Amino acid sequence: MQTVDSHWRIVESGVSPTTTWHDEGDTAAFAARLAALPGVRDCHITLHGDLGAGKTTLVRHLLGALGVTGRIKSPTYAVVEPHEAQGVAGGPALAIWHFDFYRFNDPQEWEDAGFRELFASPGLKLVEWPDKAGAKLPPPDLAIHLDTQPNQVRAVRLQAHTAVGMQLIEGLA
Image (cartoon, rainbow, N blue to C red):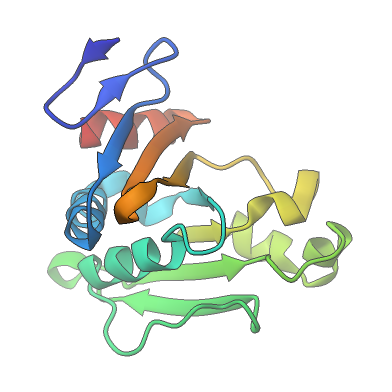
């Protein structure tokens, strides 16, 4: 493995950097770095991990770093929570959709809910439990895999699926 910096290791020909988060401060620091990247304003990010892995915690920190104010709640029961962050330097506001497909029993529910139009529109789409939407869900730009380790540590792996995803990974390295 080639070392990129003191935190990220590049594996699989440069497309899947891995790191470890030791506490919520590491999660917040990652979210702040991701929020600072221009490509995050119009991309689709999937979040993978077991219950309690920290997917919603990451989203809360990311949205806070993007300037979303107020309560940021999990969309487990609502399926989607829309948010808006103020534009940078007087620019347009950033539309953000936080999805949680945990309660889906069939991928067709994604189609029936009318989410195709939201995913085709500009803005940031964050998706927890993307596997529940199956092949109906468009490919993400970036997949973030969180694996719970002992002592609240998280093993984190990033996987780019598009050029935007690669730009995000490069910006984080």
